[in-house]
Image (cartoon, rainbow, N blue to C red; front, side, top):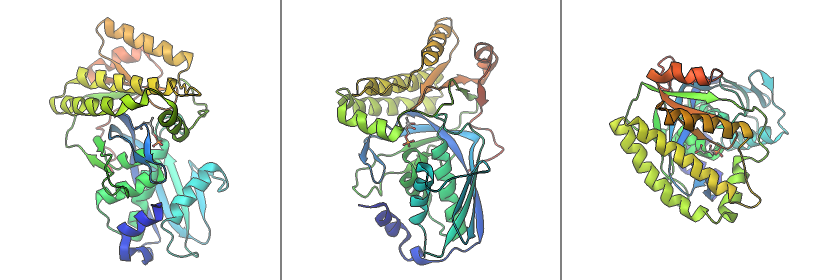
Length: 335
Ligand code: PMV
């Protein structure tokens, strides 16, 4: 099954319709997984082996402005992207799925307010905001789960970036992935904070796509991952419903460490830890022993995302003065 088959199935007769507007824009928040997506069952459609669970980052994310033009041009934070680069090609391949005819070209201008390429899911909010902008430009009026499926075709975790708050990505069972999309969980937790601890902004040596695949095919521990995920998913949902912060933090941290353990056991080893990553973890574990309730999660990069409550903000900032504190429920910009 190809991406274009999925697009045809969802758009049906709308697929040949010309855009309803000459320009459109949309915002999508970045998201951080508390239960990770690690491993694909279908590489073309970005279908995951397991479900996953995330929290969006409020007004931190990407705004994409899309307009019709006589040639394709892409700008990321005002910088023109070379369409022959890996990123440019990936974006064009996504746009081609929606090009009604060869004369239809787009100018894409994406602005992010999170550090790009620092493992903060910039591709997730980028593809999610582009998907919403396309829906606005063409006037498709798609349902939310259909938009989530389109975003997934750009980048797996983008299917969780269409909404604020907690989101579950259902892995689904179908071969065409029509049952694999994000769904917003109806729960608010205004006291929750996420601290972005940037330890390195260098581009990662191995992409999450390649690292995932290597883990699935070579790690002897990977077979234990699906059971760990289903256990953690139910604990996270319970934590969110009962606002049990310790359960949320412990589950998220343990899930991230287990994901990294599967990577460490892949061959060649996939290691996203820097010495600074381990040092920061040791500070967090010590602070916790001393009674400060702070947890972390880590994605496919060396940086950590700290989880804590607003009441502990000053204490956390005392030990990690450089962190950017994100309020996921900040109301100024909602997707
Ligand atoms: O969607 P991708 O290909 O950027 O992969 C995301 C992988 C992790 O960030 C490590 C986990 C996740 O669920 O976001």
